[in-house]
Image (cartoon, rainbow, N blue to C red; front, side):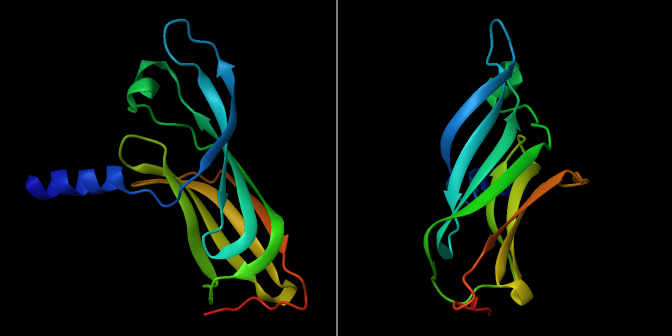
Amino acid sequence: MKKLLLAITALLASSGGMAETVGEVSTTFKLLSPNDKIVVEVFDDPEVQGVACYLSHAKTGGYKGALGLAEDTSDAAVACRQIGPIAFKGKIAGQDEVFNARTSFLFKQVRVVRMVDSKRNTLVYLVYSDKLIDGSPKNSVTAVPVPAAQPIPLK
């Protein structure tokens, strides 16, 4: 039982990245509890300077949402852009998770994975949702081209 509680605590405490909230819009009015919303957040790629990703995702309101017990839908979109000179902090993997956030009390997360398209010298970002038992096929993809004179340093 102690191991289970420790595992649950670790899951709740873990977060794959830090995002800043840019804004939000309400999608459903709730009289006495928080509204359902679409939240827009931004995070910087942790290994690539000069690239920021904007993530929009659903946030369930109501009493369960206010208490953190609701399960958000799997709807999410990502748009990554070059916001300055691109600089790599070191060699990067061909595919790596760069962000994740909890979207239910325990077992559901939204994830952003960076993939490298070496042939086109481009960073590709995919957002999707997964769950312990079953995930969702809903996804969104965006790409950031790297200047041809600057090859992507792969591990």
